[in-house]
Image 1 (spheres, rainbow, N blue to C red):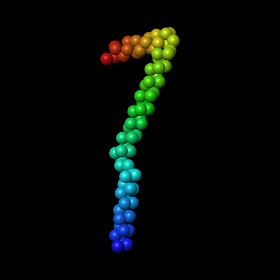
Image 2: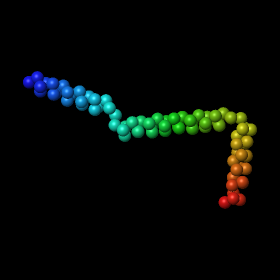
Image 3: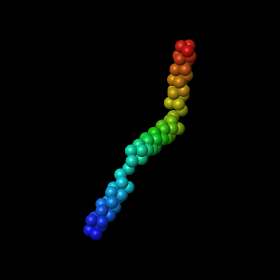
Image 4: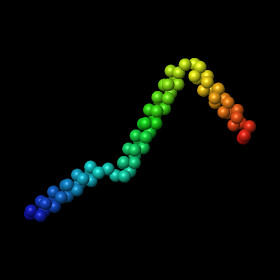
Length: 76
């Protein structure tokens, strides 16, 4: 009878440990989700900075892109 009770306690402890431990897939999914959230926050921050930037900074960025596109076009 004591052995049976002890076995039940051990079995219950193992089940609790299994529930506490996360599988490798769950850990990987959490990492990916955190990376995606971080990237979204960074993109949102960049977008807000661009929206709040003065007009001359926006024009300067557009000019850079235009120059880069012009230099890349003849190479193609």
